Length: 122
Image 1 (cartoon, rainbow, N blue to C red):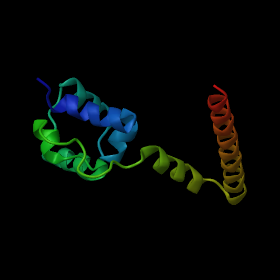
Image 2: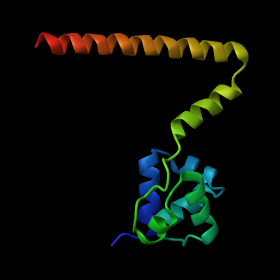
Image 3: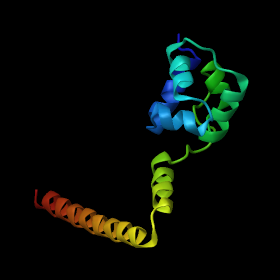
Image 4: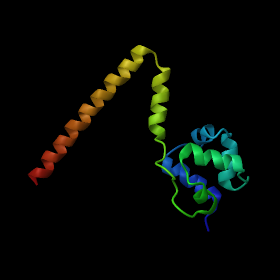
């Protein structure tokens, strides 16, 4: 039978977020999160509420395993991290990052076009 510690791990896994980043978002230490996930420490109501609020996790699911895992679409952690990094760059590096992103999109589009052409040739 699955307990709350496994459900916390499942939330992290579905969000593809490290223990360090997860713990930071809910204002606890990484070591405390490790202890919770290992079953060495219990999880208090405040932490449960923060997980629920910060990551749109269904509180009932977190506590009991019943219902859907997310009460609303989960946050896009990678997008948030990219924005955080972007905001720390100076203007010239922001411009460079934007140019590189546009170039990556062009590569993606050209690869997609080649794949479609290859599939239609079959």
